[in-house]
Length: 90
Image 1 (cartoon, helix red, strand yellow):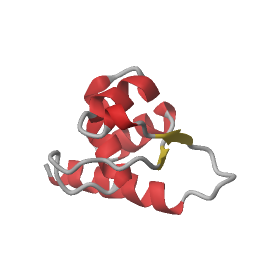
Image 2 (cartoon, rainbow, N blue to C red):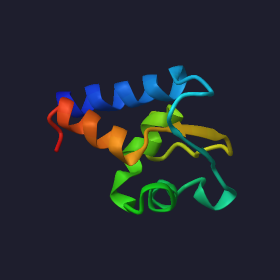
Image 3 (cartoon, rainbow, N blue to C red):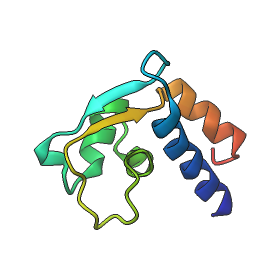
């Protein structure tokens, strides 16, 4: 669990610190995704189970917290897999 917490902290840091010219997925959240992060995960990665990545990038503290419409800076699938391997989450 601690390794997952570190992974999600790193994803949040990635979202905050990636420059506008840096490699990342930039996604504008939509109204229908406010209470369902699996929709974003499915649209971005094709994997609804990656919703914790969306939560971390958005800086949400709980699954019950609504996601305001915003620009999310997300790691690419390749970057995400590299992070997961580094933190031994895969």
